[in-house]
Length: 357
Image (cartoon, rainbow, N blue to C red; front, side):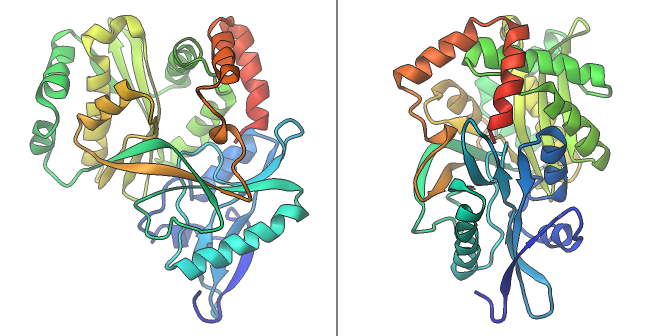
């Protein structure tokens, strides 16, 4: 811990030091930014910001972890960094700083009647290990460096599975464009709802979450929605978050009947190409479950750097990411969602997401 530093809780939307601090940090993403707090609190009434920072003797922020109090009568109260994000690395310069911040967080568990603290990080962070925390690793991430020129980057991808299929998509008449209206967002949301419900067996997130992303992040150039069209119909889409030289794909969906036309390869390439053109240094492919071999193989064919994603818990592993996804209860739940009519599923998803995060 840096000499004379102290832990403090701040409101990042009222304290301009926070966004100034994270803009200078190598590992910061849109999930660290004050806009994520604005997004969550405008969408969900059960989430409250509690950003923990380290201040030096001159009141400069020298470390921090964005934290949120998630309150629920159904799933219990907990402290999470951060809700509805795959990863949000602690922004610290050493293990002592990390321990000081997490100790302060742990002390708040009883005050807010929380059953656990959860941090979401990854194994390529130099200070991801906190000994007192329980670790769960169910997901992998993939990061592609954009430090090559466009043509060299394209040629680095798997020749038959990526390069040739991009060309095939173009020959088939698929067209890529960037969304410009809320109608585009609604078209993408329909694809995402069907994918999560019928293919994955999970409830769809509420539309309000994506509308708020559109209205809050897009005007700040932190959000781009890439679309693929065929015969003027949207058949694939991807939301990409942009901040601090890192573009992150967090949500994507494709209409299954058009897969032979290779919309996925064209969609990902156009998102990567756009990020490179805009000057971003890295493209993050987002989270993928370790047991999803097909999606893992697809992402690996783009030749990214692979890393493990960890959920760290204190005092013990709880919550949705700690559940057994091979158990009977989880299987039955997936089956129920797959057979549920879409309008009812949207209502159910809206209810459930008030208790998640």
